[in-house]
Length: 249
Image (cartoon, rainbow, N blue to C red; front, side):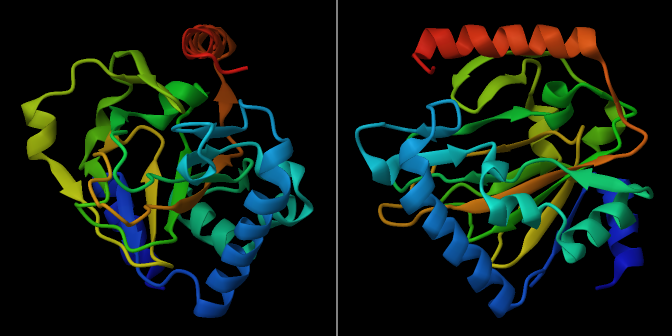
């Protein structure tokens, strides 16, 4: 990996793309354990840990959180390759939070609103990076990530509540200037994007009739980060209100 170039791109744009981040063997191991987790663990999880477009249709599973309940994924938080990349980008020691899995099932009208991850995390300084690994081919049709280049230099923008499960708040003043700076990121399985906690990003709905858009992600928090507890309490209250409105326990 050309780590120095990745660091320059990340500092300038707030995101970087790393092609073939995982080898085929590493990717297969991860996918086999994800399949096992979905088959054996997800049926026993509370609705706040596994989100569906339609809970009566298992094929519409769209997001899994708190995956550290499984020994494989708790151990995966310490994966040397992932940790080394995160620490290189943020220039300090970092620890991974619990892994997450995302999907946009085919033909579902579920766009991801423009948002900044650190609005949810409430960390100061915002030295936090999300590593997002494609598990399927990702393109415009099935809802690729779209990053607003350089937006991490502007700080946290105003957010407002959304009805999108898993993304309770979105940037409220997102507009044409933001869209003009967007980069649509096309990925192959095993490719990875890394984005700063304050980089604005979003994704369209999956308009493909038959292709998923699955991804695995881990958030790495630098050792200098401290949580703003007042801001986080406000966020948690807003999240609870959203879950009450849409019936998530």
